Image (tube, rainbow, N blue to C red; front, side, top):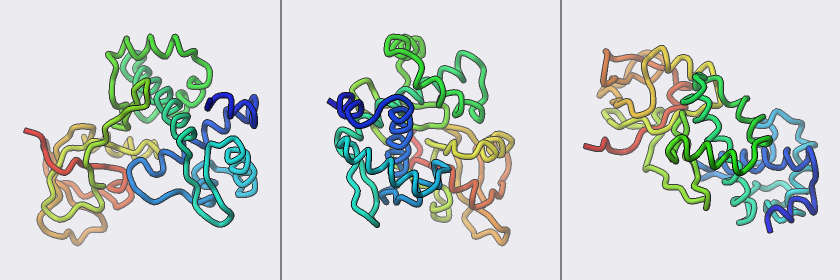
Length: 234
Protein backbone atom coordinates (compact mmCIF):
# COMPACT_ATOMS: atom_id res chain seq x y z
CA UNK A 1 0.00 0.00 0.00
CA UNK A 2 2.82 2.39 0.86
CA UNK A 3 4.70 1.55 -2.33
CA UNK A 4 1.59 2.00 -4.51
CA UNK A 5 0.90 5.35 -2.83
CA UNK A 6 4.41 6.53 -3.61
CA UNK A 7 4.20 5.34 -7.21
CA UNK A 8 0.84 7.05 -7.66
CA UNK A 9 2.23 10.48 -6.75
CA UNK A 10 5.95 10.13 -7.43
CA UNK A 11 8.21 8.32 -9.83
CA UNK A 12 11.88 7.87 -10.66
CA UNK A 13 14.18 10.43 -9.07
CA UNK A 14 11.23 12.00 -7.24
CA UNK A 15 10.57 8.71 -5.45
CA UNK A 16 14.22 8.49 -4.41
CA UNK A 17 14.06 12.07 -3.14
CA UNK A 18 10.86 11.24 -1.26
CA UNK A 19 12.68 8.47 0.61
CA UNK A 20 15.35 10.96 1.67
CA UNK A 21 12.68 13.36 2.94
CA UNK A 22 10.93 10.64 4.92
CA UNK A 23 14.20 9.46 6.50
CA UNK A 24 15.10 13.00 7.49
CA UNK A 25 11.68 13.74 8.98
CA UNK A 26 11.78 10.52 11.01
CA UNK A 27 15.39 10.99 12.13
CA UNK A 28 14.65 14.48 13.43
CA UNK A 29 12.32 13.11 16.12
CA UNK A 30 14.15 9.85 16.72
CA UNK A 31 16.05 11.14 19.76
CA UNK A 32 13.98 14.19 20.72
CA UNK A 33 10.24 14.96 20.62
CA UNK A 34 9.90 18.21 18.64
CA UNK A 35 8.56 17.75 15.06
CA UNK A 36 10.51 19.18 12.18
CA UNK A 37 9.55 22.46 10.53
CA UNK A 38 9.80 23.12 6.78
CA UNK A 39 12.75 25.48 7.33
CA UNK A 40 14.57 22.88 9.43
CA UNK A 41 13.88 20.24 6.78
CA UNK A 42 15.24 22.52 4.05
CA UNK A 43 18.39 23.17 6.12
CA UNK A 44 18.94 19.47 6.84
CA UNK A 45 18.57 18.57 3.16
CA UNK A 46 20.49 21.59 1.87
CA UNK A 47 17.61 22.63 -0.38
CA UNK A 48 15.69 25.82 -1.08
CA UNK A 49 12.52 26.25 1.03
CA UNK A 50 10.43 26.46 -2.14
CA UNK A 51 11.66 23.05 -3.30
CA UNK A 52 10.88 21.54 0.08
CA UNK A 53 7.38 23.04 0.04
CA UNK A 54 6.61 21.42 -3.31
CA UNK A 55 7.90 18.00 -2.26
CA UNK A 56 6.03 18.10 1.05
CA UNK A 57 2.83 18.77 -0.92
CA UNK A 58 3.53 15.67 -3.03
CA UNK A 59 4.25 13.57 0.06
CA UNK A 60 1.00 14.75 1.62
CA UNK A 61 -0.87 13.85 -1.58
CA UNK A 62 0.68 10.38 -1.41
CA UNK A 63 -0.54 9.98 2.18
CA UNK A 64 2.98 9.89 3.62
CA UNK A 65 3.05 13.11 5.68
CA UNK A 66 0.66 15.40 7.50
CA UNK A 67 1.29 19.09 7.02
CA UNK A 68 -0.66 22.33 7.13
CA UNK A 69 0.79 25.68 5.96
CA UNK A 70 3.13 27.31 8.50
CA UNK A 71 3.12 24.24 10.74
CA UNK A 72 5.48 21.37 11.48
CA UNK A 73 5.62 18.20 9.40
CA UNK A 74 4.81 14.74 10.74
CA UNK A 75 4.76 11.29 9.19
CA UNK A 76 1.60 9.30 8.69
CA UNK A 77 1.60 5.62 9.62
CA UNK A 78 2.44 4.76 5.99
CA UNK A 79 5.16 7.41 5.92
CA UNK A 80 6.73 6.06 9.10
CA UNK A 81 6.74 2.51 7.73
CA UNK A 82 8.46 3.72 4.58
CA UNK A 83 10.98 5.77 6.58
CA UNK A 84 11.84 2.82 8.81
CA UNK A 85 12.32 0.57 5.77
CA UNK A 86 14.76 3.06 4.26
CA UNK A 87 16.58 3.60 7.54
CA UNK A 88 16.96 -0.17 7.85
CA UNK A 89 18.62 -0.22 4.43
CA UNK A 90 20.87 2.76 5.16
CA UNK A 91 22.04 1.58 8.56
CA UNK A 92 22.62 -2.04 7.54
CA UNK A 93 24.74 -0.82 4.63
CA UNK A 94 26.75 1.48 6.91
CA UNK A 95 27.37 -1.42 9.30
CA UNK A 96 28.39 -3.68 6.39
CA UNK A 97 30.81 -1.09 5.03
CA UNK A 98 32.50 -0.68 8.42
CA UNK A 99 32.61 -4.33 9.50
CA UNK A 100 33.31 -6.03 6.19
CA UNK A 101 34.97 -3.43 3.99
CA UNK A 102 37.03 -1.47 6.50
CA UNK A 103 35.41 1.93 6.11
CA UNK A 104 35.74 4.46 8.92
CA UNK A 105 32.56 5.50 10.67
CA UNK A 106 33.09 9.02 9.30
CA UNK A 107 33.15 7.74 5.70
CA UNK A 108 30.03 5.63 5.32
CA UNK A 109 27.07 8.01 5.17
CA UNK A 110 27.47 9.18 1.57
CA UNK A 111 28.25 5.66 0.33
CA UNK A 112 25.15 4.31 2.06
CA UNK A 113 23.02 7.09 0.54
CA UNK A 114 23.92 5.80 -2.91
CA UNK A 115 23.75 2.07 -2.23
CA UNK A 116 20.45 2.09 -0.30
CA UNK A 117 18.57 2.90 -3.50
CA UNK A 118 20.48 0.40 -5.62
CA UNK A 119 20.57 -2.95 -3.81
CA UNK A 120 17.81 -5.53 -3.91
CA UNK A 121 15.82 -6.78 -0.95
CA UNK A 122 17.50 -10.16 -1.42
CA UNK A 123 20.98 -8.65 -1.09
CA UNK A 124 19.88 -6.58 1.90
CA UNK A 125 18.62 -9.74 3.65
CA UNK A 126 21.93 -11.48 2.86
CA UNK A 127 23.87 -8.55 4.36
CA UNK A 128 21.67 -8.65 7.46
CA UNK A 129 22.30 -12.38 7.89
CA UNK A 130 26.06 -12.04 7.26
CA UNK A 131 26.28 -9.39 9.99
CA UNK A 132 24.32 -11.49 12.48
CA UNK A 133 21.18 -9.31 12.41
CA UNK A 134 22.65 -6.23 14.17
CA UNK A 135 20.30 -3.90 16.02
CA UNK A 136 22.40 -0.73 15.72
CA UNK A 137 24.77 0.83 13.20
CA UNK A 138 28.36 2.04 13.82
CA UNK A 139 27.05 5.30 15.30
CA UNK A 140 24.54 3.63 17.63
CA UNK A 141 21.51 4.52 15.53
CA UNK A 142 18.94 1.75 15.75
CA UNK A 143 18.46 -0.66 12.86
CA UNK A 144 14.76 -1.48 12.52
CA UNK A 145 13.88 -5.12 12.07
CA UNK A 146 12.31 -6.29 8.82
CA UNK A 147 8.93 -5.57 10.45
CA UNK A 148 9.97 -2.08 11.56
CA UNK A 149 10.39 -2.95 15.24
CA UNK A 150 13.08 -1.31 17.37
CA UNK A 151 13.80 -0.63 21.04
CA UNK A 152 15.29 2.74 21.95
CA UNK A 153 17.45 3.07 25.09
CA UNK A 154 16.62 5.63 27.76
CA UNK A 155 19.27 8.20 26.95
CA UNK A 156 20.29 11.80 27.62
CA UNK A 157 22.40 14.06 25.42
CA UNK A 158 25.82 14.74 26.93
CA UNK A 159 25.48 18.52 26.79
CA UNK A 160 22.23 18.25 28.78
CA UNK A 161 23.52 15.76 31.37
CA UNK A 162 23.77 17.09 34.95
CA UNK A 163 27.03 17.37 36.87
CA UNK A 164 28.22 14.00 38.11
CA UNK A 165 26.09 12.09 35.60
CA UNK A 166 27.55 8.72 34.58
CA UNK A 167 26.49 6.61 31.64
CA UNK A 168 27.58 4.57 28.66
CA UNK A 169 27.68 6.01 25.14
CA UNK A 170 24.74 4.61 23.17
CA UNK A 171 24.61 6.98 20.20
CA UNK A 172 26.86 9.44 18.38
CA UNK A 173 25.36 11.62 15.67
CA UNK A 174 26.89 11.07 12.24
CA UNK A 175 25.82 14.44 10.81
CA UNK A 176 29.33 15.93 11.03
CA UNK A 177 32.31 13.76 10.00
CA UNK A 178 34.70 16.23 11.65
CA UNK A 179 32.98 15.66 15.00
CA UNK A 180 33.38 11.91 14.56
CA UNK A 181 37.08 12.39 13.94
CA UNK A 182 37.40 14.55 17.08
CA UNK A 183 35.72 11.84 19.16
CA UNK A 184 38.00 9.24 17.59
CA UNK A 185 41.06 11.19 18.72
CA UNK A 186 39.61 11.44 22.23
CA UNK A 187 38.89 7.72 22.36
CA UNK A 188 35.15 8.26 22.79
CA UNK A 189 33.19 5.55 20.99
CA UNK A 190 30.05 3.47 21.41
CA UNK A 191 29.81 1.72 24.78
CA UNK A 192 32.50 3.93 26.34
CA UNK A 193 31.75 4.73 29.98
CA UNK A 194 31.79 8.48 30.66
CA UNK A 195 31.08 10.67 33.65
CA UNK A 196 30.39 14.39 33.62
CA UNK A 197 32.71 16.17 36.04
CA UNK A 198 31.30 16.93 39.49
CA UNK A 199 32.10 20.62 39.23
CA UNK A 200 31.39 23.16 36.52
CA UNK A 201 34.45 23.84 34.39
CA UNK A 202 35.52 27.39 33.67
CA UNK A 203 36.55 26.34 30.19
CA UNK A 204 34.15 26.75 27.28
CA UNK A 205 32.81 23.23 27.10
CA UNK A 206 31.73 20.12 28.97
CA UNK A 207 34.25 18.45 31.26
CA UNK A 208 34.00 14.67 31.25
CA UNK A 209 35.90 11.81 32.79
CA UNK A 210 36.61 8.85 30.53
CA UNK A 211 36.73 5.24 31.65
CA UNK A 212 40.25 5.07 30.24
CA UNK A 213 42.42 8.16 30.36
CA UNK A 214 42.18 11.41 32.26
CA UNK A 215 39.53 14.14 32.21
CA UNK A 216 38.93 16.04 28.99
CA UNK A 217 36.91 19.12 28.06
CA UNK A 218 34.90 18.94 24.84
CA UNK A 219 33.04 21.74 23.09
CA UNK A 220 29.26 22.10 23.44
CA UNK A 221 28.79 21.23 19.75
CA UNK A 222 30.69 17.96 20.15
CA UNK A 223 28.87 17.15 23.41
CA UNK A 224 25.56 17.72 21.59
CA UNK A 225 26.44 14.79 19.31
CA UNK A 226 26.79 12.19 22.11
CA UNK A 227 24.00 10.34 23.93
CA UNK A 228 24.48 8.43 27.18
CA UNK A 229 22.17 5.83 28.63
CA UNK A 230 20.81 6.86 32.01
CA UNK A 231 22.46 4.03 33.91
CA UNK A 232 25.49 1.86 33.29
CA UNK A 233 24.55 -1.77 33.03
CA UNK A 234 26.39 -4.05 35.45
